[in-house]
Image 1 (tube, helix red, strand yellow):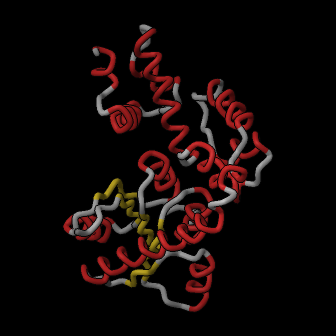
Image 2 (tube, one colour):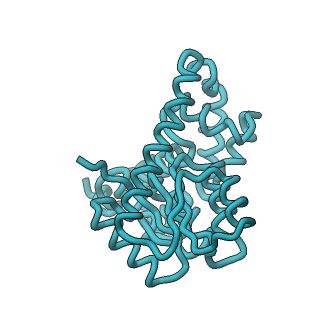
Length: 248
């Protein structure tokens, strides 16, 4: 049986994005979102933590798909496939430097997409399995200390209403960003972004239970400028909407 994967699509051509979404969902996978620029893509990454990102190289905004791919590689734990109709040597060289898990060349076909997704996930799992085997014996010692986690928790408690990024968390521990995510996950069992989301939701649950603040006010307090996005994140973690939780 084919595994179901959560996939984010980054494509600035609406018809292509929709076509790709239909094909991916027809394969049985879940499309968690579609973005046409890097800023929205990063937001959706934080919100949904997909297993795989399908990103065009040419997207809207000043940040292109290759730069976005570098951010994904450095800050998120997810597989990456580049979509492209540009096969010039310079573009390929820049894209290859990111070490994506695969490519899909436009115009694409359903079989090509299915093969690329299967290969990318397999490559990603293999790549991380090798890392896990290499660090298995030292996994405990390579994780962040309990004191580091306490510093992070204290920082989160006082900054839920702010944009909390990976660099800010890494600076609290004096651990380079390049290794912070892996060491954080070793210590907590969760990626930094998933950890922050769950801490935000825990604070929201406390406020829903013990204050008379409106859901809109709580949304802002825990760092969600958009109440709809807050409700989506809350329901994903708890299984119910904020309003339903308050009535429990």
